[in-house]
Length: 218
Ligand code: FES
Ligand code: FES
Image 1: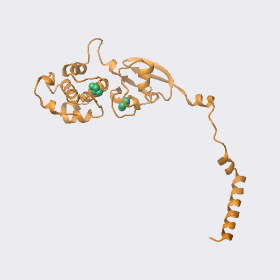
Image 2 (image 1 turned 180 degrees about the vertical axis):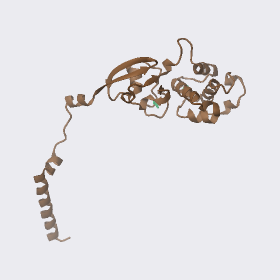
Image 3 (image 1 turned 30 degrees about the vertical axis):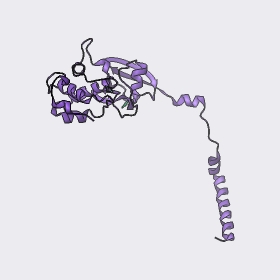
Image 4 (image 1 turned 135 degrees about the vertical axis):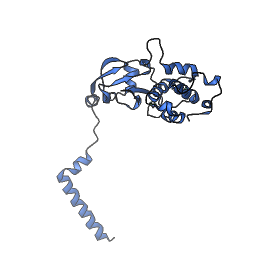
């Protein structure tokens, strides 16, 4: 490139810069970044009204639009049976039912389910009478620390109701595979789900020799 080429290029760029300035482009580029005021920040945290049928009872909420379902349950309603594990959709600990479907409450914005029916682990027993799958978890010793258990039970109920638990143990394991158990209680969880579906005899898998003992969900 010759010197005279460089001069011509500088002249050209100057000309472009002047034209851009005249049109307001440069002003926009050089504007200092603005820091949102406290007022603007609070305006962005908008409130929404929400009504749900939660464990059979009508509830109305006035919440921050960014509230997730798990936070609504645990923080607003003190329904702490639903557990927060990963908080990013990877472990299944936060599983609840929305309109009968197994749902990850950590990935669900509460505002998106206005008017729907939510069922949590607290809502599945009938007073002091446990849900049959809760009974089966006790019988089968299907938990150790218990942290994953509410999510396992909610997924297990959905699995049974959708008919996936009774077809084959492989299908039940596949259906339940989104629920992780760091204590590796998988064979006993599977036994509890299959027994509740009525396709295996009701007994503690540890007390009998069963192929299910050799199975893992991992
Ligand atoms: Fe929701 Fe892990 S806490 S999937
Ligand atoms: Fe401990 Fe499943 S029983 S994580």
